[in-house]
Image 1 (cartoon, helix red, strand yellow):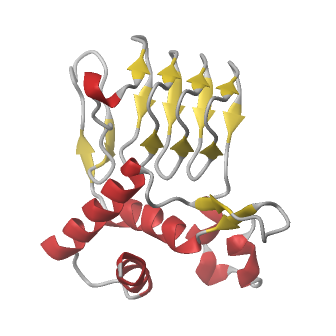
Image 2: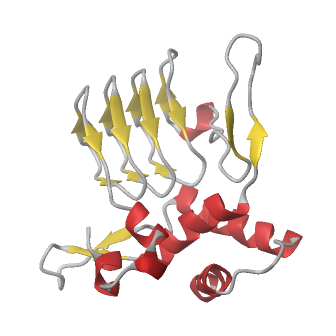
Length: 183
């Protein structure tokens, strides 16, 4: 049901987004955060071993479409920060089992970060990504939109794991719609 609602809202853009649309998007982000919905899933039947879930990419892009730019600055005079209202910084507490070392790391809401993950600064984890339990995200690492990182992995410093989420953004102008589903 969530899939059908997200696809309908993405494909049939309303003139104005209503509270029910924002509630739907929040439910979608909650599922991403919990790891129950993923942009790609392991699938032994696929040649790559992975199945791309295009509807999830649509949902992530929907959040960018829906969200207005808001001031998210902690101290605007020292470091102004403006981003989409639909993608605030993800909130963690000590019970999450996630270790975020101080010094310039940002984890966007709408991604799954497993237990016992360590994130060394500066690092960035974007919406739609999945980071498995016990993984180390080292300094100067980027886990891009829809990237899938397994359990007990090490993402080395100065590395970037990026997916082509932006491909679906321009789907109206594509001449080859299958490109939407390729990694």
